[in-house]
Length: 376
Image (cartoon, rainbow, N blue to C red; front, side):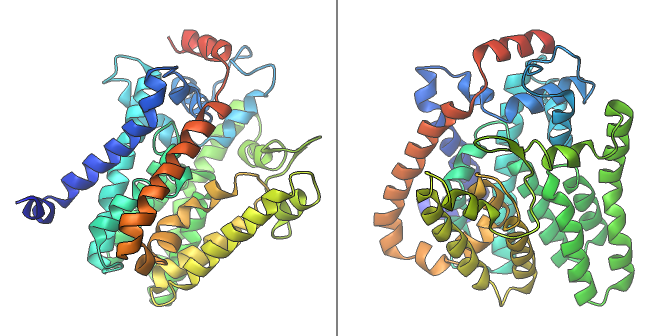
């Protein structure tokens, strides 16, 4: 009877596991300080944008450390969803942000299951989707706080599904939204443009770059608000990475700059972990060779990530994690040894990481109190 339920209601199982994985992240904070969930960066910035839509007052909660233009680095699609969700939370922005993240996370898991099942990418689409709810550990945390990754995954998976079904208009609309969901969203336009060129669909390939108009429109809006058309770009090239002695660009002309940065400092031990991280993702990506669409997407995104100068490499590699890790290493993840031995250890390590790291990157109570007053 239980197996019959799994067979007939896989999406119910997926939704239940995704919600459960998130509630387990919250568990220790229910007894300590639940506000840490919505105080974790970059959640406060998205809440503030949802209320002000980039019209930032001089006394914004972080005015002592950050200029108003810093908000331009956070794209508006997620804040728009938060603002809509406040209609259901009676104006409670923290609650609206968490509900938005959870809703997008469940939707992303749904779409991944459909993608895996329709494309026959793995041995067990349901098991792989369940694993997606917990792994990688950086994703486990991000789908439980205020972050744009769940929304981005929704658009990415929906675009791939629509592309396979030749729903070109849906592809275009998803890319239009992806461009204002996260800064790397513009990459999808060029990647799918290459896919359509490969398919010799010249008309669609020619029209696809017009999906960038949403990003251009955002920059025009930034010009009227901040007086700088490239405000978002300038943040990423001047304020996005804070090193030991200065603020530096998060984009570099040469690959693996972050690797060399840490190799020459007391934190050189981090470079050993970066070696493993880069190689695992690269090997997993190369395993996708026979699946041309996701291979092209993954390899281009991987190469782009190599030029990012930021300590949070695991987060910037996340957009290819469902493919490079879950699909690339499917034979390992579906083995009995992994399911019954390694997976419980993985859960322990992942939740230990999340419970330990989540409070370390949260804004102060004082700044949050100021923000909540202004949000009201």
